[in-house]
Image (cartoon, rainbow, N blue to C red; front, side, top):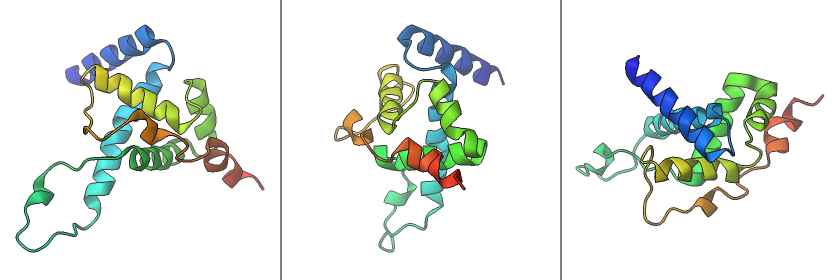
Length: 136
């Protein structure tokens, strides 16, 4: 609990210092990374017998993280997902990437040398993902 309070305070400070996104957006992306990693980890490994590389933590790519964040947002907020994200300043998947790289700079997350913030460009359209599926 104390660690969570410290993390929340630190993410709130980071959001305030950066000024582009609400603290809730940073918490959501941070939680969404764990959510997405668990979903990826739940998939059966496709490794040869005796290969222990599956014991390593799984890397989550930008597009995979975006899809995980979309699923988590829809689970949490349903038809209000776009409204909540927009309220925090998140309007595109590139915004998810900007948040990730902000947290990478502050050592909250890590990246592979081949990763780029551009991996988050146009992964999906917010209006299509969060709004149109609920229209009657």
